[in-house]
Amino acid sequence: MSLQHTLNAIGPLDQKAMAAARARQDTLTKPPGSLGRLEELSVQLAGIQGKEKPQIRHKAVFTLAADHGVAAEGVSAYPQAVTAQMVLNFLRGGAAINVLARQVGARVIVADLGVASPLPQHPQLRSHPVAPGSADLAHGPAMSREQALAAIETGIRLVEGELPQGLDAVATGDMGIANTTPSAAIAAAITGLPVARLAGRGTGIDEARLAHKIAVIEQALAINRPNPADALGVLSKVGGFEIGGLAGVMLAGAAHRLPVVIDGFISGAAALIAAGLCPQAKDYFIASHVSVEPGHRLMLEHLGLKPLMNLDLRLGEGTGAALAFTFVEAAARILSEMATFAEAGVSEAGPNPE
Image 1: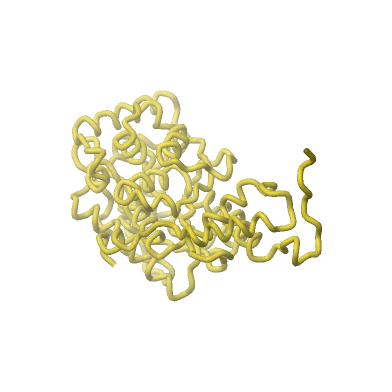
Image 2: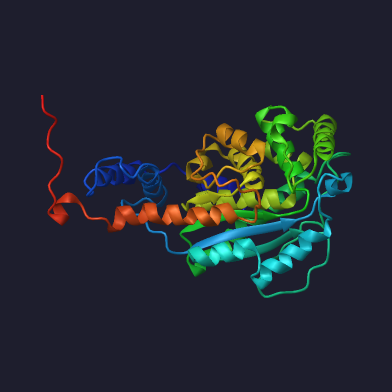
């Protein structure tokens, strides 16, 4: 489906299903509100799926990879070759995301949207490179507007390609050396906040390199002058191919009424792009965690999303989102499997004494 068709397909949450879910929550064998955020999440899931008892069985993490020309500016502690090396690690099943996805019963979809180093053919690799890495955003646009659109529509097609295998929830993940730099640039462009509040240490750079990274991002914003009201333009000016692909995954998830579990800082930047293209899509987003990257909390506040966890994560790959599947599935199971007071023959709370 094209971007425009996908945007047209994103509708509001099902208020009738949400009302039914709230009513059922109030009759389950527990004091009202005693399961906290899980109750709130269950109602959101009901609205997304359009049924009182949502089900989460088939789960997929979309881990998209691409390289970034801005790596040449020395903003990362790791060489660019690590992007391709980690993609191979994903395909072998040896990365953190593979371990955590296995734990929660999710499949991992690994896609190349623009890795600079050649990757061998592999039956599990979705190879859809827009280009062999984006351009250096410190000296001009990271990509053309057409490439930005291609990246987003690739993410949409990836989700649609998984629907026949069964898909009840999607999660987002990333791999790309230096990609915290375009992510911070996107956040600064869209939120209007100072770069120094948004840019962090990424792969663990020292104070001097962090100051340099901030200066590089400020230079990129000054040269490219992204318009915050034009999300596609922001992506093309200072983004990355995997960030665009993840925005497409999020929009496709919303269009197909799937909960979209968002990972950390890079996924947060993609969510800013997706929400810029379709504010309604935010209703389908679930923030898995808040990252150590300082800008991530500010991204989530801008989006109006409340994270489920704070585990001091900063790896990416979709690791936080995979962990959050546990809570998402638990919230759905509470509504569908927990007995009501009437079903269990348990007395409800009496009226408050006057």
